[in-house]
Image (tube, rainbow, N blue to C red; front, side, top):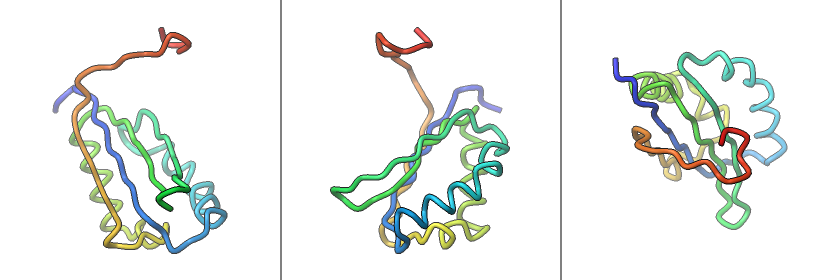
Length: 106
């Protein structure tokens, strides 16, 4: 198993309102917290493009792919109201990290 951390970015348009999306996220919070290999998750919205998404950091690429498989096969897309043709997924290994001067990690 590879030890390089992996990043997954999911971005899509939804047929749910932001309020409904927030409710789904709150309901899934504990499940997400217990996702195997998940280090952190950043959820975001873009009012300009009307997209929502999440950037996930996983322990390795295999665990990232495992999560994506579940996202696609366990019907999570419909729960988030994903409009299929708008779904964009990027996956890669993290090659470096730069912490900002105000980061608590630096």
